[in-house]
Length: 89
Image (cartoon, rainbow, N blue to C red; front, side, top):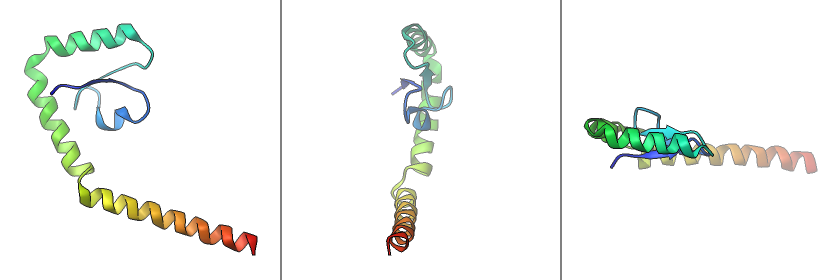
């Protein structure tokens, strides 16, 4: 499935412009319309976008990678909690 999104928030992390899909400028209806038209006209690239998107998800968003990132996030929070508790004491 081809993806066209705007460059708002975290969308560019998953929809990498011209790699896993197309990105339009946020709050720019004409750019979004142009990107949609480009995607419709460029059907031969749909399998390429799909392959690249799948590869991105399998390497960056698999359960092992996400568990490691979550663990690192918890480690940072725990360290910040230790620092904060020392300030209060």
